[in-house]
Length: 303
Image (cartoon, rainbow, N blue to C red):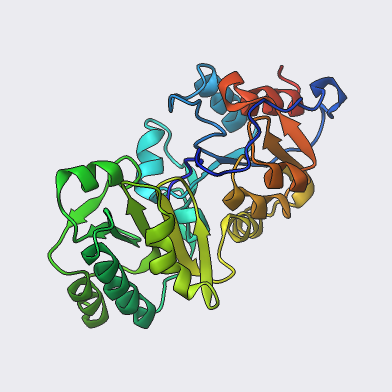
């Protein structure tokens, strides 16, 4: 689920890459949309926001530039992370839902047959001793039937609206009947150990028909095929009347690559994985150096 980047068995360079010379970038581009991954990109390694971010967001608001945090997090979590900023645009659940001004721009619910099968697979895997569980990511709430504090405490930073429930099958049935007004747009497995064994035993079984990704050391996700952060950026561009030439995108992890296709200003962070760097046009300074802020200020001529 999360944007957190694995540290076990990944292909991240142990040393930071050399960023693009910012003085070589245009300072008069007509920037209108900035899509930014969170963990490993906007946030530093301690999960802190850049000190100068509020000032930059004020400038972007004044100039009509839409700032869109793009994350595996729940939409409500992202909105909570930017208090005092009404009208925020967020790309949540790795693109499965986009919200602007509190209204849904796009969403892609998962078919219920897949949901029922995945619930049973996760239950079977956990019964073998795997220390994890399933998060059903709805538009309104995340639903977990593993309700111990150890597990839920790992979920809550990413899903502020989480409901502990007895049976995830029952939630789907209640959505079917209209008793609950919600749709499940993503499934996530969270493991308190490295997620590989749990993911391979469960969500990976749907990789031929759905969008499957390991999204962090402890997380893996499943959503509708073809739905990703890139599709969300495209939906936002259509809604805003924005072109790729007016779009910048920033990321460090595999699930950020899809955004680059729709952004002429595509930046891998200096701390990014090798495959992300290979797909980006430019390299931004690292997340610990406010790389996003440095680049955006340069592009809008406010550095």
